[in-house]
Amino acid sequence: MARCTAPVRGHRTASAAADCPACGARYRGYSSSPSYPPAYSPSYSPLGSSGGGRSSGGGSGRSLRARWSGASSSQLYTPEELRALTPIRDTVKKRASLPDLRHIFLCHAWDDRQGVAKELCDLLVARDVSVWFSENDIGLGEPFLRAIDRGLAKSRIGIVLVTPALLKRLPAAGVADKELSVLLARDQLIPIVHNTTYEALREVSPMLASRNGLETAEMPMADVAAKLAELVTL
Image 1 (tube, rainbow, N blue to C red):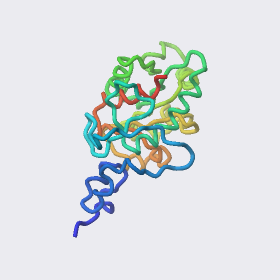
Image 2 (tube, helix red, strand yellow):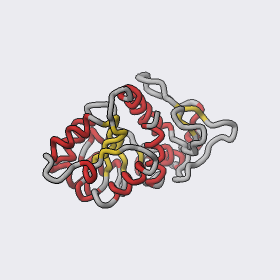
Image 3 (tube, rainbow, N blue to C red):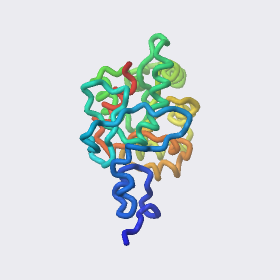
Image 4 (spheres, one colour):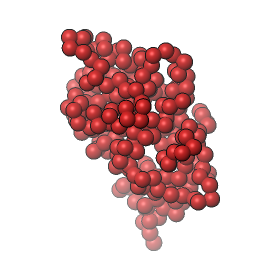
C-alpha cells in the first residue's frame, strides 16, 4: 500500500501533495472544486478542456488562470497562489485611486541589495512595474527610516524577499523588521521565498510564514516577476 508522505514532507503546496504516492490522485487536477475561506471569492478562471498543466517554472497542479491576467498571458497559478494573491489584488484596486503610488515596495535584507533584490527589481521594471527599492530611492544624506516610511506609504503593495540573509537579519530587529511590521498589518504583503523554505522562515517569523506567497523553488524568478506584474497592473 502506498504510504502518505505528509508526516515527512508535508502537503503545504499543491506540487508536494501531487507527488505523494497515497494522496497524489486527489490533488492532480483538483482545480475543479477547491475549498476557499468565505472571506472572499477567489478571482480566477479554470483553463478550458485542455485540463491541467505546468507553468514554465515546473510543478504540478498549476492549471488556473487569474481573472486579472491579460488575454495573452501564459502565467498559470496554483489554488494556493490564487488564495494568497486575491486579497492583495483587492488592495491594489482600492489603492489605485491614490495619487503617485509606486506599484510595489521591495523589502529585502541589506546583504541582498546588490544581488537577488536588484535582480528582482530589474525584472519588475522591465515589465513596466514601478518599484520602491532602497538602492535607487534613498539619496546620500537622506534619513534612512524616514525615506522608508514614505516609500511604504506611497506603494500599493509590498513584497518581502525571504532569503537566508533575511532570516539572519530578522532576529536583530533591524530596518527590514520595521518594514515587515507595517506591511504585516495590512493585506498588502507577499513573501517571495528564495533559496530557503517556509519551514526555515517559520522558525524565525511564524506570522510572516503564515502568509502564502511565491517560491523560486517552484518557478524561476522571471515568472515570479511576471505574476507580480500581472497582479499590480490595472
